[in-house]
Image (cartoon, rainbow, N blue to C red; front, top):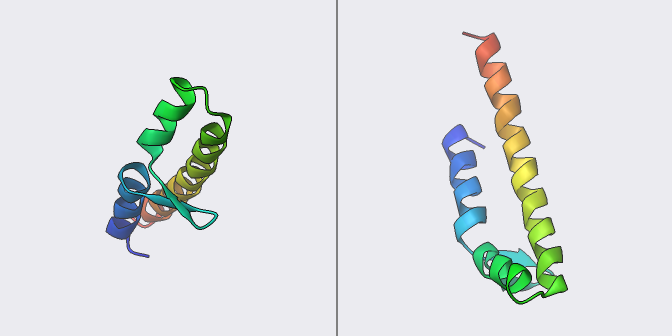
Length: 71
């Protein structure tokens, strides 16, 4: 995956629908459902989406380290 693709993937996770167990969810809507409505299932979905963000961010961090070694 190209570096710019990784950036676009991170943006997509944050702004577009995420597929969890065959259903589509928006991170912003789940934040509202969890923090305002107290929906515990929305909290679980947020954690799953945050794990995707964490994984993608780690890939970017690794790429940056490799790139810095070659400068």
